[in-house]
Amino acid sequence: MSTKKRNVSLHSSWLLVIVVVAIAVILGGVAYYSFYARRGATPALSPSDNVSGMPQLAIMPEAQNLGTIDYRKGIVTVYFTVENKGSSDLVITEMETSCGCTEASLIVNGEEGPRFGMRGHGNWPTGWSATLKPGERAQLKVTYDPNAHGIYVGPVERIILIRSNDPEWPTKRLRIYGYQKGG
Image 1 (cartoon, helix red, strand yellow):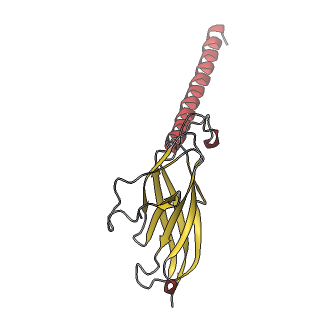
Image 2 (cartoon, rainbow, N blue to C red):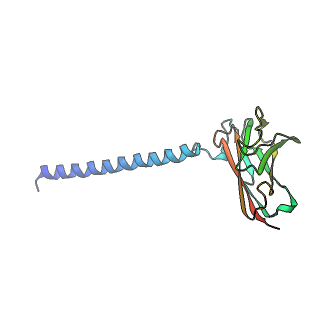
Image 3 (tube, helix red, strand yellow):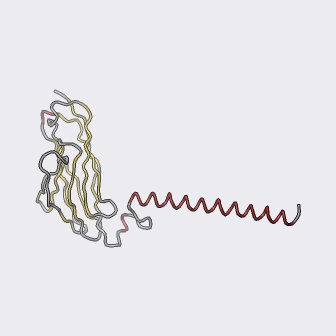
């Protein structure tokens, strides 16, 4: 093989390597951006590293089992702990539930706010917000009315959405579930 052909072959091999590496870098960058853009997170910081003066909504637990629900016993109530784990004020602006049988209200410093249910079903609270200082906690009260749909037997799962000024997770999703038995 002549030197010229060998140089062209060597050049082509390097060119192929450069193209493959460039494509891998581009695809990796797209995947990296897509993952973090969907999360709304800065990958260099974990949520517990909140050093940039942001509020951070934390809710414990994120799901609660109502167990076996007897419609004859009436409304079932559960509580979640809501905390601002950030380093600036957290403002909760509204809540919404996935069904008219479920309502959510926030209790801050012993005072219960308005009840939020399913949007479009009944009166919708407007102009309400609650502020939690860094480290401050509140209770989220969630009620489920097993008689809202008449006598129902079967699994129950409802979603509660909480909207706030948390830049990483502006809408948090909670869940209650159980099994409703008949008479």
